[in-house]
Image 1 (tube, helix red, strand yellow):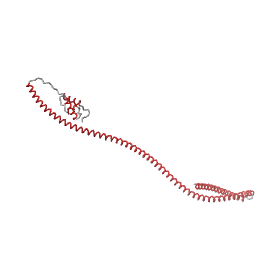
Image 2 (cartoon, one colour):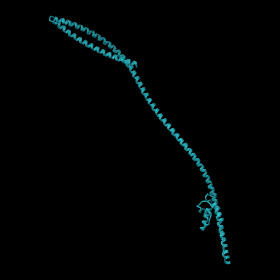
Image 3 (cartoon, helix red, strand yellow):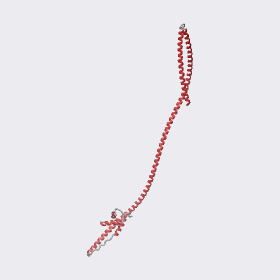
Image 4 (tube, helix red, strand yellow):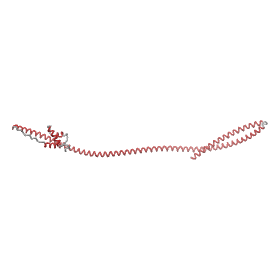
Length: 300
């Protein structure tokens, strides 16, 4: 199979150049003159066409002596025979060379056809692989986007989970504080109940003391009144005794001492009554405070 671009004109030009240089235009020489291109079969066919197209130069022989003509004829015959032998040898060599080159050309043409078929197959496979690669790239890009979306969703879920965990921790801490507050309130309530019982007991004791102090105060006031009456009576008697002072100096002295004693008793009675009144007032304040605490506990 001839390669595209090798023409008869190119082969003829190379063959003429070889002949002009005194060389034989063999298939190999012509192919080398073409730069190593062209199928040997094609070069052989075009080279044969070139040989057929070459004009045969016929020169007119001059008049020569017969002996010289005979010698020339013999020499020409010998040279022709030798040239024929050499030509036949060259022809056989060229035919062998041509056959070898033709075989190489056929093998190379077959190889070229196989390579072209392989190139076509590889091109088809390349196009198929390119399509698959493009599809795989698109699938990979889509998978990457899906992975990124899933990662974003996972990150958002992780953030929400962290927020929920923080909220749960805050609620747990709040519940712990509330439980501690409830326990404290229970303890306070238990303490207030105990305090209320103790306050009620203390109030009962203080009430009893108040009643006792009130009774004592009443008795002290009654005694003060009696002492004041006695003092008034003594004062009257003292005045009367003063009238009779000179006559009854001794009685006056005794009455004076009795009056002083009565004053001391009256002062002591007044101090005791004042102290009893102060204690009674203090007890009333404590009772009022306890009653207020008791009323506050009842309202809770």
